[in-house]
Image 1 (cartoon, rainbow, N blue to C red):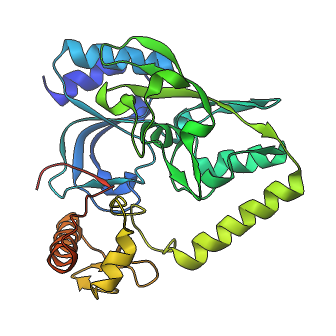
Image 2: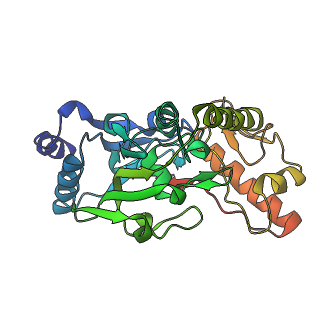
Length: 304
């Protein structure tokens, strides 16, 4: 099917200004790299998402779902498929007593500020994670001793047939940095969080403390995808990389962060190939020295 035909059909499902053709993915990822996607859709409701999935399935069009693009590396050849972006146009939320009900495109940083205003605790760990709520639930994101599984009470998803399903937290199979959402090809569309009432000043003090830790220890001023590698059992990836002598190592425009060796950063207009080459150099060097295999935490997709 031609892109023009798909564009015209999808205009009957969603606003045409939310349908982008040959869209550079570097505009939609925190690494600021990536070739173009054939088509990028920005839906505004779960009903739109349901209809989009049913349409794409019916017409055998492959698709890929992204959130804020903060844990994603898209290769320079781009994506021969339809990208569904659950982002800013899908980010409304409301807070009622100790419960937060939010569309999945809401940024964790934005949510955290409103949650603080309501003096609710339990979300502090997520306040500095540079991603969306849906992405955080998808991978059971966590930091500083907290994880999404601790606060998620209910999740609404669209399954791969386009049906809308509501799941309780117990149904989500949360483990370290994963859930059944990925294995079942679910799209998170709405999340209910259950938090605890607390004291505003105590919550703010803890959030400020975590923010200071992040800003002093992580390269938040540079494009990256957060922690590049998962934590190997019994080790810390950043410590292994530092002890291998790789702090600050360059490959073209990509660099091992001088502030935190667990981060590969886009130092100087790197492309995806630069970053992937540096990742391979790091993995080989760490294995040669410590016989530990590093595994990427960042998701890598696309054509070379």
